Image (cartoon, rainbow, N blue to C red):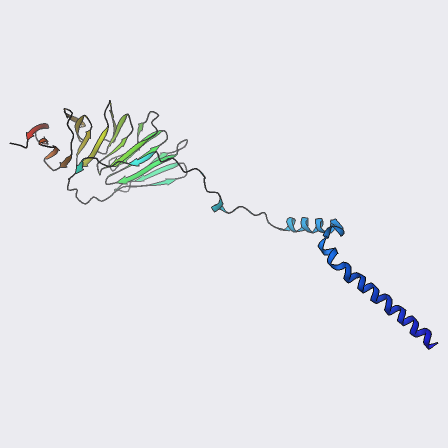
Amino acid sequence: MLSRLHTKQFLKLLSITIGLSLFIGLFPSLFANPDQFDGDIYYVDTVSQNRNRAPQRPHPDLHVPTVPAKQDITVFSNAPTDKTAYPYIQTTINFVEGHLSLKAFLSDGTEVAYSTRGEHLRYSKCYGDLCIIVSQKNLLGVSNTSTEWEKGHIFGEERYEVAMGHKAALVASDRKLYIYNSYTNHWETISLEQETLSAFANLYDKVAIITSRRILVMDLTTEMQYEQNLLLRRIYQFEMRDGFINFYSGSKLWMFRHQTEAFEEVDLTD
């Protein structure tokens, strides 16, 4: 009786030992090849995790344009040396870009609005008593004497150079000069025919423009323009003062007097 009991216990223990040995032997191979398990386990688990997980958005820093934006508007730099002693100029006007609109705030607190529906801004700048904006369709200007944004039309030019004075601003293309006059709130257009812009300056109510062929002086209060042909000479230096403007070309000087509104030619070798 006792021997039979020991025999049964021995056989039971032996079967358990053999079972454990087989399981331990198969353990690495089972996990090395998960396909031996029922695939539905993995499928259901993956779906439940994705269903409970909020969708992840790509990080915004990853969406960087691969092609840089075209730099089609640059700040104009004078080729001749500008010796003008400019006073301290305070900017007294500002604008804010809102939803499909621009709002300019003048020095007296007046608000002047403009709808930008259908336009996108390419350049904007406030300086002194004026602000200008270049869009893909229009030139816009506003000053402290404005009642609305003054619109100047552009004609398909793609490249521009911009220069700011405290009473006037210049937007220059390869073919034309567009000048905003803050006194009259008007855009003046000057054609460039076989000539290039060399310099632009604004002091008080006078504007000086130098091209490869001529000198232009504009009085902003009257919109009068005065011209001097350069006779194939080059201006190397200029200076604007309260009563006159000097344009130096080597041994020659062209002086524009505000009082007489005329150019005088001076030979510096005498």
